[in-house]
Image (tube, rainbow, N blue to C red; front, side, top):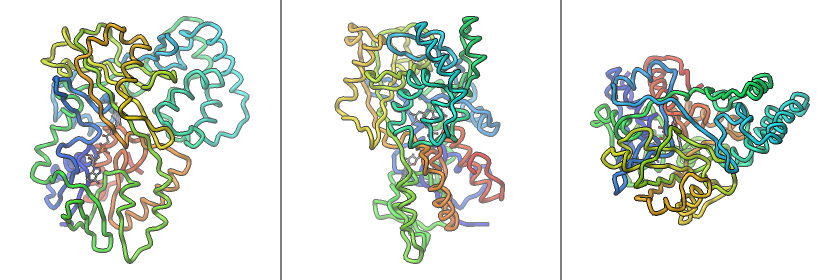
Length: 452
Ligand SMILES: Cc1cc2nc3c(=O)[nH]c(=O)nc-3n(C[C@H](O)[C@H](O)[C@H](O)COP(=O)(O)OP(=O)(O)OC[C@H]3O[C@@H](n4cnc5c(N)ncnc54)[C@H](O)[C@@H]3O)c2cc1C
């Protein structure tokens, strides 16, 4: 076949698709990107003082062989392997992650409350119809009210009773009463759960350092500063906000699906029902706040979760621990860096000008920084990400089914974190593989595994 394939977006999904097209020796394709860099949400930035920042704490882990081979091929030995050490900071107390596995770190009365809640949840006869119900039924009142509900509200900023619970498997540790009781009575630290308990981080250039390695594979095919603004599905034309346009036979979209649907135009086909479906796709955004410090930070923690309402961020990463090159001149004896994530949504907006100040105050309040450390702040960096978390809402799957079917009937494949709008397959490896596999499907009639 020699059909023209047009890719929208040079984030991990678009780059995965591009890499695979090159690998298969296919020539008739192009990629359009609205920004002047590649990597999308997985790119990194160096601030004026020389600190490198990711768009929130990114760690690289995967059980996909193709992806792991690609990482080896592109960065070779230029990465650092880490063992995850993550914690919860709550009400002045440190609790190892996952919270529910380590409730013995709570004051005795709260540990008892959590355990009693877990036991009575076994007899909870409620029908589970949303994420909030699932939390109560799985963990009981104690763990729900102390951690699960406040923490998840902070991340999603979407009412939890409007979210589904079918995305959870690899995202939340579910433990038995027997195991929790054993952890309490034998004073065990139960900290190894989860697919990201070991992870890689690029030695140079942050997470974006890895995605920049895709440059040679796209350099003669990519056009930057091209923001898609309209898709005429009758004439198979993409139109950009600078007035430029291009024809496609097959379109791979990786931009946010709800916005994409609003750009679809047709005189022959009715698209009104798609707009209504797209309205049900909800998301939250994130402010990433980087705090560069003129001081060495001791310790081995990787990141910390914050469920308390009076701390504005839900997560903080000790970013200078991931690689020395995240600080000026790679000098971690003199510099360190903390990266905080503050979420917002249509339900709970934030005032941008207040975010950095609130974050610094939050770090002091939580005991991560001392009052005196305010003078050690060498740099602050703020990035607003409007599309950060695609929410698994109750209506999502129904909307996606209808939208994706319509698009595929029109030779459009929408993939990636916001292209597919599925948080459960929204990591970097999933995204790269969605790009690779959609090309395998288009050119080799192979089945897609990550996206179904
Ligand atoms: C806070 C946070 C933390 C994360 N942590 C991890 C982690 O620890 N590990 C992990 O594996 N993953 C993590 N991720 C997920 C990771 O960032 C995504 O999997 C990945 O970046 C998604 O790739 P993508 O190509 O699908 O989308 P994106 O990265 O969003 O790329 C889409 C691209 O499309 C472009 N685009 C958008 N609209 C248009 C338009 N109209 N016209 C032209 N171009 C357009 C964008 O500029 C962008 O380059 C995290 C994400 C966030 C937000």
